Amino acid sequence: MKFYPRRRRNAPAIIIISLIDVLLVMLVFLLFTTTFKNAPAVKLELPESSEATKSGAGVEKPPMIVTVATTEPNYFVGNRAVTADRLLSELQSAKAGDPQVRLVIRADGDAAWRLVIKVLDFAKQSQITNVKAFTKNKAL
Image (tube, rainbow, N blue to C red; front, side, top):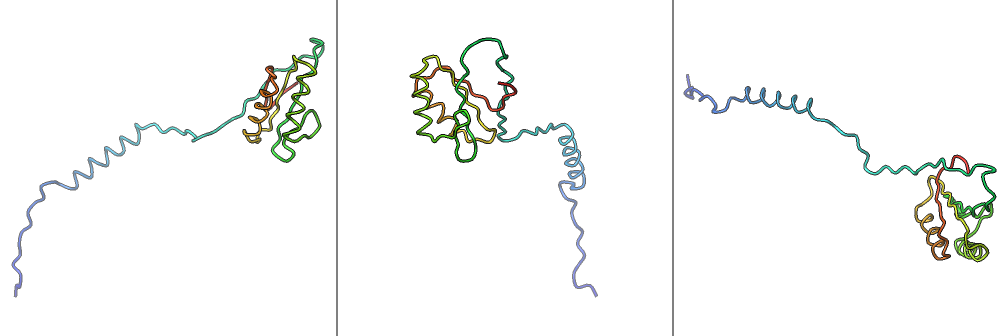
């Protein structure tokens, strides 16, 4: 007994197997011809400096060195730890003592930029114009 009459299926308008083959070939072609760039989002490398004063080259006064560290205390003048307010007064007194004072800022590689910018602002307030900033100094 046949309850349902057997109906013949119509052929599809689009042949699916051929479509899959074409799409696969296009995908492989795009994978081989595409160039991928490995660009980091934001990678910041602090500069290194090989500039150094040669010993015996001149008899000029040594520069005033301000070191910016990552841990408290953040500021050092020479080997002395100072606060931000004390740093401003040190820079002003150095400018009053020598109008041609040279300032060298040495920043730790992981030091926050806001600390370095604060030193630059203090130098500007003290009217010190000869400022150099180093992060890694090979020889000074």
